[in-house]
Length: 328
Image (cartoon, rainbow, N blue to C red; front, side, top):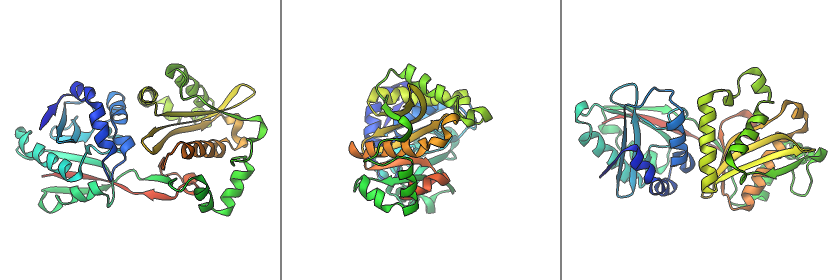
């Protein structure tokens, strides 16, 4: 078993990410080090970190932090728990968790507790951890942050045919259709390769003209979350996984859609339009244009993020995520 501190983990990110990408039954994008480290470095809702618990053995990993409550180990990203702190072969990762709990934390005499989020209910990692249920002192399953998914394995045309007639009609009226140009002189510009600092300021400028910003409810008005998304954008830019489209008219930015690609999965992060453009239907236009481009580049799964009513028309399924509080 390899015991790593945080800086050693940073130096082995590529190994961890390869394991996360191959782990069944979790979200590879949000279990990936880009997401986990951006959250660790910027989001501290649960207090300062007492210590990190990072272990690797045979290509399987666990990644936890002990924060304000001694003996309670949380994922590095504990705000939404989209990602899973165990990656690799599910059975091996579960064995690594048990071994770490029994051998590496003698001060807690086996009473350390672990919060394991980001599990797809019924998935391979969930089933592996579920084998511990009958021999655990504490096992509490709790609802996770479920997500809306679009399946693109059969392409954009198959997705289009699965939509309701009413929704297809609304997309057509907004100009969101492959054979049609956006109405009102709007153009879509791929700015993914622009310098990240200037690009983030450009996105913020759009955010600051939204109705949420005016109401004081925009997530980018919270400094820690602004820094989280900035860190994520920087990391995705370096890896080549950043995907940002901006809708413009007459040289003025009206809206953006911001996300990233890892392997064959796209994960949406933020989408906004300025209040003055509310009646242009830019949300539908941008989402469809982004979906079309993702399908063209080989994306098979388009993750819309957490549930919202408007996403139901777009999504093929709701993927249920759960978490487990475990004490061996």
